[in-house]
Structure formats: C-alpha cells, structure tokens
Length: 201
Image 1: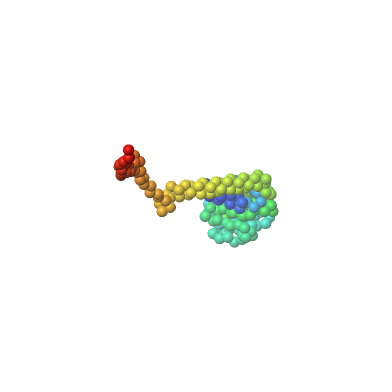
Image 2 (image 1 turned 60 degrees about the vertical axis):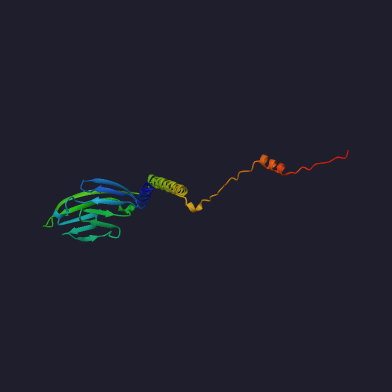
C-alpha cells in the first residue's frame, strides 16, 4: 500500500511539471527544459558577500537584489528568489522564457565585479514526458486496484477465521436402544394360556 501511495505522489509530481536544476555559476551553462516545468537557477555561492546583483534576460531586467532585499522581480507572479541559497525559481515555464540570462554582480562602489551568462532553452511538451505520465498513471492504477483486491480478500478471510460463535447452530443427537425382538416374542408366548380339549370318544 505504501508503494502505491508513493507512486501516486510521483504521478502528481509528474503531472504538475518536472523540475530542472541549472547551476548558473558555471559560466556559459546551457539548460534544456520543457514548457510547464519549474527551473531552479543557482545564481551565486555566497549571497552575504554581494551587496547588489542584477539578473537580465537579454536586455530586460528580471531581478535586482540590493543589500539583502529584492528591489525588482518582473515575473513575480510565477517566480521566487530564495536568499538562503541564492536560488531563483521560475515556475510554469513558457517558450518565451528561452534565451540568454546574464547575472552581473556589483561591489559597494557600484562597479561591476563579476558576471556570467546562462542559456535557457524551453521546448514544447515532449512525447517522452507524455509517455512517462501515461506509464506512471497505469502503474499506479494497477497497484491501487491490486491493493484494494488483496485488502478485501484478507478482510474476508479474517472474518471467516474470527467468526462470531453466535452464528453457529448446534444439534443434539441421542440414540435410543431398540428392545430385543426375541425377548418380546418369548414374553408374549408365555402369557398365552392353553386349554384342554376333551374329545368324546
């Protein structure tokens, strides 16, 4: 039963969209993702040492971070920035999210100190993904049906073994010995009286 629940959760995860992890700290990294997925962009290693950074997609600013605060997030309806691990999460990817992303880091003096680029490629739904969803759905369905049948049979078996004694019917059978027929016949014969017949002669 636990396996079936696990598979069900996996199915729900797949149907809601898979997640891709992209490490933007690797300069020039390329991430291939699918429409509807979620992408985790690892921006920097240690945010506490960075007073300000800007994340751009081509020439459009997406995210500005300044002194422990989000100043701008132009796609905040489907994204979130997690300062603890400097990860920018974009949900429900669309094809227009494809493109080159550039992170530029600035020092306290306002001068650019570091930058990197990452190329995000968002493709349409793949047949493989649809096949995985269908396969997982079939496996979960079979597991749930099998578990239900096994549970029902086990419950019926336990009910038979632990049957209620009130449901039992008892019959008392006694045997009555038949009298011996010979003795009865002899008794009858003993009771017969014979008379004397006198003949005139």
